[in-house]
Length: 426
Image (cartoon, rainbow, N blue to C red; front, side, top):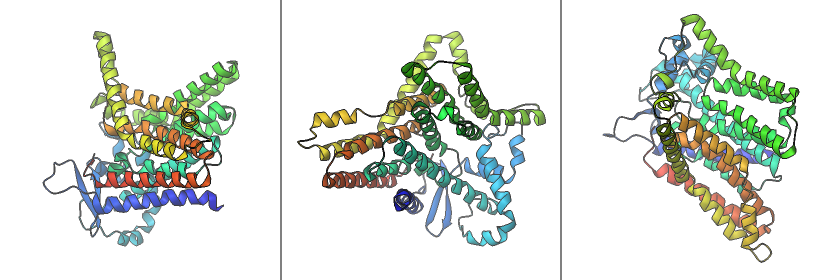
């Protein structure tokens, strides 16, 4: 029992340390460009809030505003409706809850205090759900998992995306969760027969609820398709009516919640608005270009994909340092470098496939920023953990402890490096 709880305690410690670091050290200095705003929680504890955050809180307090003709979050209502529902549940107790809030900066309205807390609570819940999936993926493939591999979960927390969005109402936390959902699904379908189990349909529907909050959950569908195709090719599985029926039902369950929302909004208002397409031209930018200059369209797509890949490389350098450190420790006469390099070649192809899917998704969206490159990172972190666990599996007790200690030290260094930077705020 203790072995099952201990990893969550460790991850909770990572989250707690990072949270206090953000509250104390992460704030926008005076005379800095107007990119976000400080929200004074209590005393010197300050959270940086994105300028989109008040809109999220307003919509959670007044969810009917999502039905406005040009509501910015109309196409992504899931998280807002979840918080709105939670807000209704706790509202009878608000007179006892409100005195707990001692915000002194008055940067947000008093009515938004409880929704703000609920948004942050859901952020942490989704972060811990991501860690749960991380453990499920590792335990499903490589039991028992060494703590040296579990320490790598710190990379889920100690990064620029968490620094900018962990303590602010937003949807960027899904850039951590959705890749792990897709990777878990890919591996379970590919190796553990998830596609044949009843819970596959429940998972499809739950992912569909995620689609209402963040569109990257749609990559669940190609993840299933590629895993099934892999099985068909490698195991010579027949494509029969049962397989097609189950696949179509899973796709329907995945798109059903969002489709129901679109129909509901269109029935009430006569239209449906997507600010991503109408304002930012995401995904639709390529259509007129394909008609007029198809070669240029693919050149632009390739450049955007390349920019995202470079950003992933910049964010993943610590993973390479960790692999090099562990490799240096575990090499001995019985396990020479040639043997250990073969172990490193066991980096799961599934992790690379899912990372590629997310890079391609945002390249098609025409977006090339660090936070949209980040979804490629969680699968790479999982893959690194698989390799680290493999390297430690045959090492002696002393070398295993030394390597695990080095991993923890480097993860702590990553935390310090992220907290010591002034940015990002967006």
